[in-house]
Length: 246
Image (cartoon, rainbow, N blue to C red; front, side, top):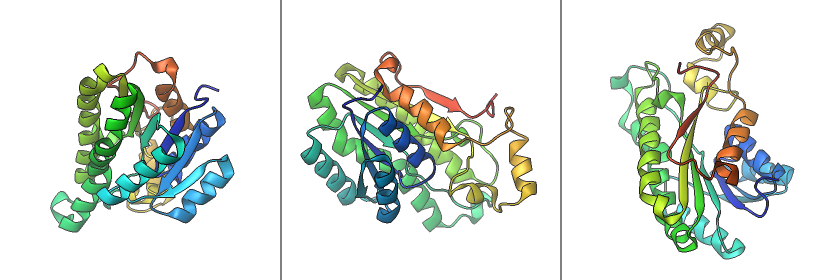
């Protein structure tokens, strides 16, 4: 029970990696708040793991503020935040990505980290403790072509993780990231452009361990980094990618 008595918010927790992280946290004793723009999906995961669901649009300041305030009021503190919510644009030449697509990718993948920090960091500073985990991507380390602005958003997240870690360390707050490779999530087809056996084989050929990331893989890595076992670890972006970035 490595997260016993911890209160944790997992954004994008209604599916994919977020659902896997939420399930692992609950199994390790955390009180998990499953936050998602899709309230029905969040409720289904929360019911399955014995957690709580909350609707949030991580790209909107008022929505993020309402989430943080509601959880703080109910639970008294927030020990862990996992910034997992994310989207991508479809694979295409960089100049063909529309401005609306670009704005949405940066709002959900980057601005969300700013907004959650804006509203949560003051509470963690007052408590002199806390952990924030950002779910970035191997795309931010070893970019694939035709996903240019998604790659850039995840590179931004990795740099933000390191900058946050340095600034917040004196307050007892740790900030880390994990870099999954593509996995069995709702975004997989978007990364590949089309979900066919041929495209899957092409993707898998770039992963030395020969398989996609799973929600369980992300849950295990996230649990370690958010637990007291990792109390000396801050500012890292752990590759959970089967060797993809070697």
